Image 1 (cartoon, helix red, strand yellow):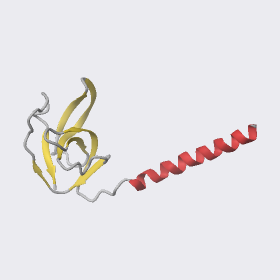
Image 2: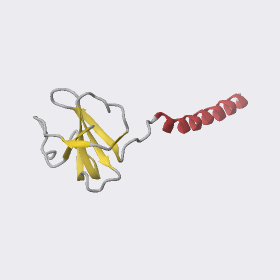
Image 3: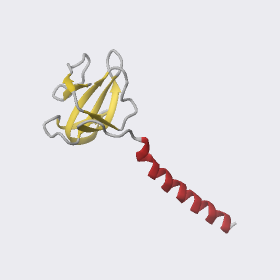
Image 4: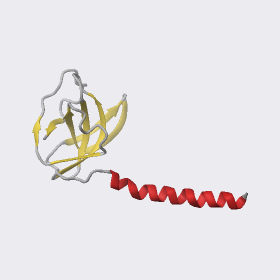
Length: 123
């Protein structure tokens, strides 16, 4: 019995390690000049999503903001932007890379505290 547990323990550890190595391969490569990490997304009035992202390599884009999620502090991030995603193109992304963008207007039904976050439509 001990031998069987030792075998499955070793096999399980190997599978976990192999799985961890494969994860980066599943993420699409960054093809834009501006890299951002997706913090969270929420439904947008009229369809689609608003994606809250932290811009990693463009300090002039976005602003430092403490974000709330369901009334609780989610975290403070250095360069927060809201990306307008009407077609759910980035629904499952962990990061969004882009080069061109344009300012997006605020939408109806915005929460208090969101009006000072820069909004973008990514091309």
